[in-house]
Image (cartoon, rainbow, N blue to C red; front, top):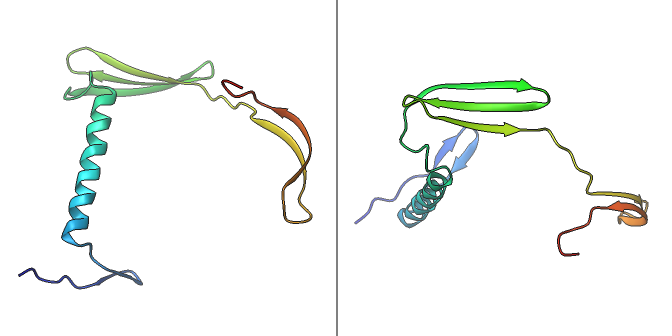
Length: 110
């Protein structure tokens, strides 16, 4: 026979414990997510990190990971903001009634 867990408190919030079935479901979901993440950059999995470096040059952010075997994994980022749409709307009635559409970015296939 299993022991029923008691509800506990975290600060001023009463917390009810998860059932064993729910804990197994959560564990499987976490394992599935981690397995998917491990496959994303499989070349770096299991390597020992020597150092991590970052710098900002000419509008780009560079992040690099140097491994003990001399290999280097790098990521480059640029701060890019693209306009999706420009509209003039009437909000008086509580609805968003578009009075004029100035620009709408074309979607793929449209």
